[in-house]
Image (tube, rainbow, N blue to C red; front, side, top):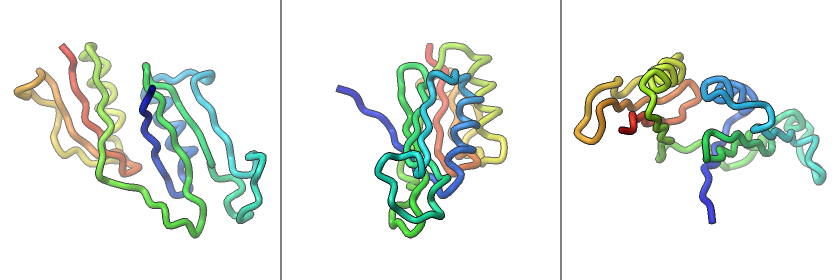
Length: 136
């Protein structure tokens, strides 16, 4: 059994894939990207042809799935969740924090917390909420 997160974007999924792949050092063979036009059963809106219908990247042991919503879809990007990134490497945590906060909004900067020595909460430039934690 496994549980994965699925993120939806409005036409900028490819940019998000590239960004997250760069931030987390995702190798090309740990990425999968399919556009609507490359889906075997695509018969939808021609404006969706170059949008991403399904993609995934592997970050550590987790798979993050992503797609662009089709034009006219009522499916929307949500804000009632956060992805949590944990590492034992303080330098890695600080690098990820710096990268994810670029163009985003920091709600709680990296600081000491009752449950860990470094914790942060931010929303990245794509509107995705993140919690970053130094695991000891």
